[in-house]
Length: 184
Image (tube, rainbow, N blue to C red; front, side, top):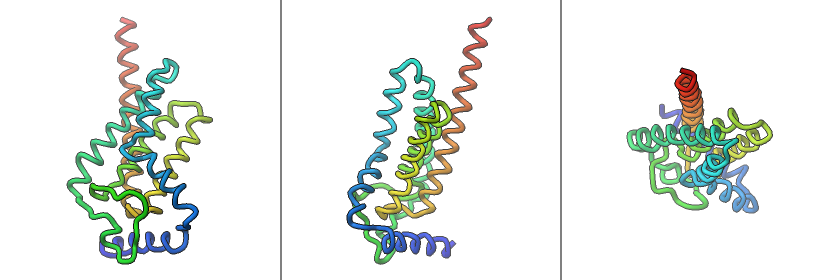
């Protein structure tokens, strides 16, 4: 396990050394901030809930975000209690706002992937693809700003995908049960 922790830290130092550029910093910090407390995704999903044509997409996304939140922020983060990389990796400097919770898994990644994957599955592709790209950028931004290890982000992505699939399944099952009830 030590080799993985070492690799995680070295990847962040490589990003800091070779990819971080002062002129990118404000752009990446802004992209990262879109995931703060899931605000961007929650606002988007709330708007979709208000539009009858997209209500199912909004509800599927909300359920996905809720599932991801419960798994990541309520359960795993507190059990794993992983310290942020900028506190442990010698020479790593974070940029932006200092988070006040644990590192593993990435809540930004979980929420972004959960919402965007749910929307990708339920909206037209011309809307779903840009949202998926934004979610990936938010995930990568967490590495750039130095507040998450790559394994934190990877775990968040996997949990987000699981949450989106679970939500899609639950919503489809709910819709089938609703149709059965009205057909009787």
